Amino acid sequence: MEREMRSRRIVVGLDGSEGSSRALQWVVDTAKPLDAEVVAVHVHHLAAYLPAAMGVTPPMDTRKWYEELQRAFTQDWCAPLRRAGVRYRPVFDDGTAPAASSLMRIAQQEGADMIVVGSRGLGGFAELLLGSVSHQLAHHSPIPVVIVPPVQKEVARESKPAVQAAVQRGTLAPIF
Image (cartoon, rainbow, N blue to C red; front, top):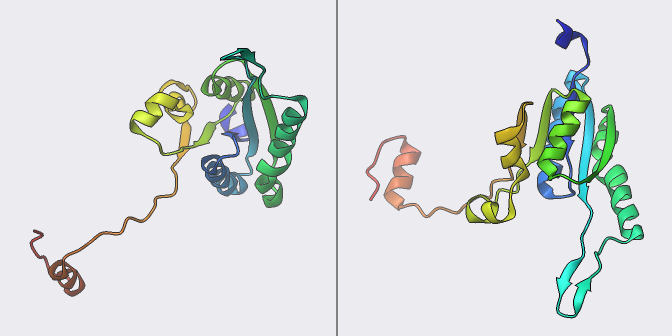
């Protein structure tokens, strides 16, 4: 009963990528009919000094760049929420923990009903090497997680003429 009385809340992770844009569109389409509030989250990891041939190089995070990233997040990345008239709050998190952990922490603090993220669709070795926020969330989140897949690119298939003709006639044909 208590769950039905409180307003619905969705946390969406944004990073400016195509995958997060797809996740955000899914959230807009879902939140609007539910009259849900969206908590748009960007987890920003502060850069550390990197080893270099002549000592260490300073991080690329300058104050101006950091302010521009915050502006892009609140103005550009959250724009679809604003345009759709969805209630939302942006949360820019200076992550000291991995992004998945930060998203879970924020979702629990907010009393979220779900966490939504996009998938880069790397899979396999690339995902193992680079890590995957969606993978970590799927395995460790105590809150339901929606992973919006990437756009599937159409693969041109070569088909034998007999198979094409059989498909057009609606009959079965052996495929060699």
